[in-house]
Length: 299
Image 1: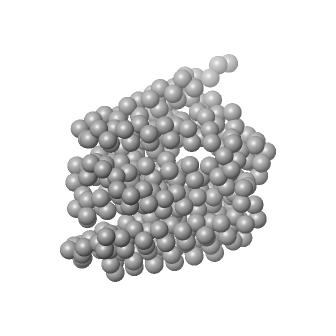
Image 2: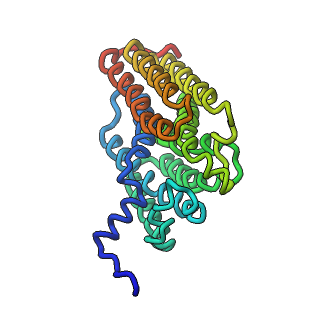
Image 3: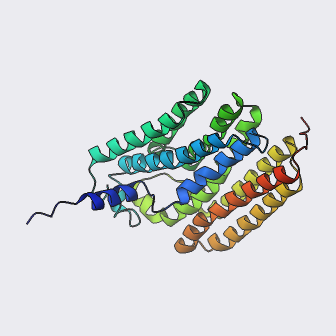
């Protein structure tokens, strides 16, 4: 007997899972650094039209990135316990459907930025190329999480370009902070799949760092916070901003208590909890601009 055809509601549900809309953590990890960039670039008063464009664009591009990732990993995911039931890996969505969906999502994201400066267009194309190529770096790059950090942080230079028409050096330094943060949280994620990744030959930072992966994660958190502190000092931020960084440091310490035993479930919990790391950094930044609006940076 042949399986009954899937109705349109079930088909939309499969597309939702393929885009990971049921798991919003990726959207949040992409959104927080974008908001950092918008608030720094706009001196605490970003153009609210830009904010909405970037929020919607974040959802669309993260969704497209998930589809592209699953397409690239379609021959690997069926052999990994955590990913074997994803729609493409399970054969519930065809490769053609996945490519078409990724194309539609990318087109919608590009249409969002059409009213913006052409420099934003250029960075958007670069961001798409980085996001599309990221899944393939896991075949050969020892720390693909660093590449992911660039992909997840590209909203920062785009935010500066949209808000000011240029990307100053400090914008790229802020992107570097996100690279270290991504290595930290995605290594926690990679610790969950370590055994499966060894079997199928995927390269991850958890394998590259080996028995020093916990130390490497904490060093990356420290680098993230140090760079964010420098950016805040450079931009004249004061007490609220640094209070946010201090709270983020405490969150990083909490993550250490979760991952030091290398338990899969707790490593995944630490990964998910990184939403709060990004959130408190943004909250400190936003409050600092509210209560210290006239502070001039020591440039």
